[in-house]
Length: 104
Image (cartoon, rainbow, N blue to C red; front, side, top):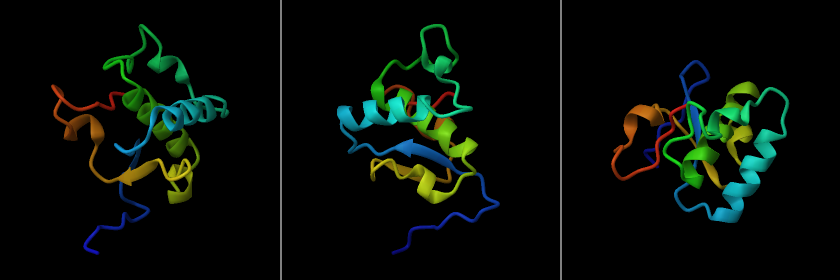
């Protein structure tokens, strides 16, 4: 209760849940990167979203790319219940010193 439900016109992002484990995150990266239109080179070394170099950040970046390309429907951000739709831009909302950052 009390959780805001995003409207279709509202800008939304798909990010990995903090509770997602490494296997889930790896599977999510593999799935998203195998979809047409998802450019995973951005999380490779030298790419604009390479830093910070942690699994949750890289997973969130490519999961969000997939979510955006697929039309931002909530079901495109399920990833076996290891992701969540947020209404705050994750690149601006997180403490850069201690939390993963979506930078893509």
